[in-house]
Image (cartoon, one colour):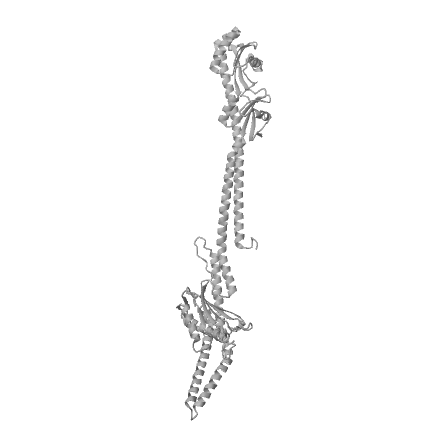
Length: 580
């Protein structure tokens, strides 16, 4: 038997598989959608951070320019530069540095020579003074420059120090700068949540990441679009942005590298995936159980129907009905219709069988004529002989008694024959009432033993047998008939007759057994046929009438026998018979 051989298994597997596929598809689509949205969010945050870095560069450049202009326009600065005296200019520069807290404050004369420097080394000051921005300021133009430093990228704005408006006289230049170092990168990370690296000339000079990652970061400075890189156990998306300000293009290849951690970004996605997996697993379990319940509710009525059909086919008992339990939640109208149709069909077949049996009994009356002619002729001849003897003039008292006894015996015999024929040929009308089967069996056993020789009847009665609604008198006739036959079969074999009661599958059973000679296999199939008899002087109607009585009460009769070991007749009766 394969797993798909039953309807319940197929319904269960189909619904469970459909549920698993539906849940799996839903989880896949949700996971794909969430992953796609997470990637887009990552890109948006990266671009937003890049825009913030650009805005910061522009804002810082404008701030540098305003501060530089303010200091360059100060009269004391112009007077000090005009003296071309480095100590004088240095003192003024130191005073402004206390206010600015800048990383670079550089003042040169009109020849580009350094007059004062604050916040940088002498070498850095000389390098800054040699930048094109300083030379451009000496021609009257403001310039923006970037210089690599050991600990970051130096941004500085250079403006001219001039006297006059229409034809300004350039006295020198003033540069104000701030350093893009690890501290600035850390501040940006706090604001944007992204890691930042500043570099120039292909080298990382400051970053929020450890120095061992600098070689990998430097390789991303020339990338034109966002790219993915791995740093240790972390996965990042990197975007390089040139360090420039509005109106001031970047020089020297200065770059700000913005990195967004995919590992951190997708960590919440992993939690969502785990939650989806657990939810999907629970949903599959619940759906599987629900599928099993649904399959069972569908197939349980069908199983009840097929069981009843199988039992009817095995026993031939058309009185068995299919009963489907009412359940308002799982009421199956189709199964109920099928059960009702089957019950109606069995009722129709049973009614047809009863009608057919009745017709057969009427038809068999013709065959009975020969039996009646033979059975009645003999008693009539005996009665005629007895009457002839009574008409003799000299009849002794003994002869009178013998003649009267013969007449009485033969009249009783004729009456019995007539009653059997009438009982068999007409429908039996029952008078139903609650009956104690155990008491009925005792009375039947006693009646079968009166006036006739034969084996004794032993009783084995179940005290738990419930009261049965039946026709006690008709059932008593059937039991007495069967018991008399059993006692006759057991004569001379040293065996007895037993009558036993029990309850089996909600039906009362009466079993009559003897340990007589048994019935020949060829005769056993015809034992309930009308007019079939193995006894001399019998009509062959006793057992057919008993069978009609039992079946009319909604029961069934079965017989089993073995030659030399005896015969057993079993009667099954419903506790409450079906409507007549």
